Image (cartoon, rainbow, N blue to C red; front, side):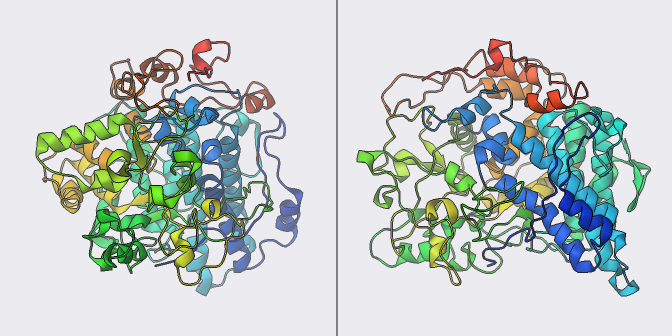
Length: 631
């Protein structure tokens, strides 16, 4: 198993944020001077630029999840999670209710993504400052391809969050670039062209567990981006009919222009399936750190605690065994972390915990028994956390209903969620808990051991090569589980959705031990929800199955509205009769009003002097858009 791998090692402060109409991007002069004079001058310099481009993902995937992690946001905004947490945890609740607590609440990720785009642009533009030899050409093409791919990826996330935004494709900002561009007609063609450039320039071996992109990564994200564009913008909710239009591409290095069709996308997925060498892990639980061999050993030593859920696993399939866990056989692209967080970390996009998978802390347990939060005797094998974004009753109930109708047990349900009442009998709620469902996230959950020295230690401290966290706070600093951005299971399910051939989906179903079914859109929708719960995919899946002009009865608004009336724990009282209700109006109404986009930060709208327009549904003068205290 790979331990403590960081997706980016260099810190180059290429600060990027909108500042004015005439000077749209503010670039750190230290980087500018180095670039103009001597940088990059050798291949290692481009490697450093590349690492800096990737490091934006650590700033998003680690750090303050409620403030800047879009993958966490998309789960909270979906019907998979409630806001929950304590009374003071208003950011996560505002996300869940599709409102805002301040006009700049969603600014940090906006700035981070433009920072990543700026770094990628610099990497693309300066790569041939290096006098590459013929022998080094493949290295040059790989690094250029990664630059194009990462620019496309950051732009994809940016427009999925904020909709129409300025499209920045150069470090030299023209007046035209400062203007808001159409995501449907201008930005997505550029995103897909960047992915095609990456596909054609990158090789196939880089990226095998090292956090970098390769040809197959680009092919997979071509499918994800194309499917969102076709479903959301072109209103093709069922792609197996083959009715999605072709997209005209932009000519640039690695992309000859022309068009990208649905048939092309299918061929790219088949290339991954036939030639990529990826395969599903034999056991779904192998993907998650709660299946580590040290916890498995405790389940079989006959002493103390025993975590029954993994006791029947083959030890060779445990998270920290070869081919499992971090760097596993189905991991195509991911954010990686390492033991490098520290309170004093600096830099434009830094966060003290950016090298720790901090989503584990946000989804951690808030046990409140007699002020014993963090007592592992009450939560073994899981640890303390902030208790935000708890799984919704809707997810549990819908999943349980599917099991009942099909006459099977899906291991992914308890492989993804903790059933607090039945798995942690001693668990109690904090007195200020609200919007609690009785479930917690098991994927990415913090894991403790009997062998650990203290409460709020983590199992990572028992791994070979571990050194004490520089945070001196293991609960916040010691989380090194990869955050999956693309798994092979996703490739298989996308292939079924695009072709109608159930054989790809059947492989995912077989691994979960559930009956293999024929193709239907409903079957694909369910499989995607069960397989990828809490991995940041659900909300944008809902959006592309809904289309661009929804009514309150469309797929996403109807699914979100189904949360209303579900019983919840409030103020720590399980016996209360509170039910989930929307904060200001209804989930269906808020979704239709916003089309699933967040508010653009008002500070950036002001600085752009009319070139950036607020998204519909986010008028700050409208009470339905504003956070309201419910509990």
